[in-house]
Amino acid sequence: MAVAAVGFAFVVLPLVGLLRQVAWSQLGADLTTPQARDALRLSLVCSVSATVLAVVLGLPLAWVLARVEFPGRRVARALVLLPMVLPPVVAGVGLFYAFGRDGLVGEYLYRWFGVQLTFSTAGAILAETFVALPFFVITAEAALRNLDRRYEDAALTLGTPRRTVVRRVTLPLVRPALVAGAALAWARALGEFGATITFAGNIQGRTQTVPLAVYLLLESRPQVAIGLSVVLVAVSVAVLALLRDRWWGGS
Image (cartoon, rainbow, N blue to C red; front, side, top):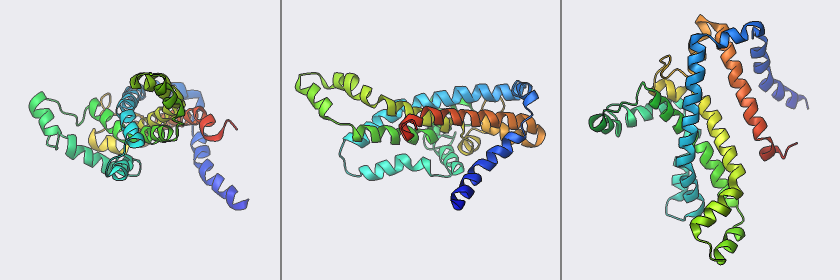
């Protein structure tokens, strides 16, 4: 019990320390400063966009990893999930050399279409998608792999087209997992720092999301940084509450 108490305190004390520093009477004013407003708006736009991309790209990917047998599937799965454990700064460097102006793909995007992703809002969305995608894939893949296929087989036996089975049977059955995966991806995108600052920079109104603003404001305007930090903590608690039934059975 004593060791468990120490472990619990280790997790909780930083949160208590943060909350003690909040100037609650001026929190509203801190969160409505121009820099805070820009960061909050941009974080919402980038994180929601990244979540949509993660779902659009991740659902077919999760389906293939869960349902299709092919050589090297384990390696493919490991590569897809690699951003979960990859240092964010390394992820940013990789994105730079892949999608930067002189990168593997970015060179042609700029040459053919005049698109430059670095130091742009699109680049921030790309960085957040890269780190958030595995969280959706791993959740959706597990749900698809563990789904009782007898329901799908019964629908197919009755002559239902496979596309209709997927739309009317499979997806409704795994919907809770898809919602959970999307929530995890959104929370991860919202809190992304290293890949974003490395690939997209820290430009107010363009790439400066809440985590980047917190980092920049800690020395110049610490109360605003603390207020923005509280917003991220509140979002994290809300996501955990949303996923409570899935992870802990509502207890």
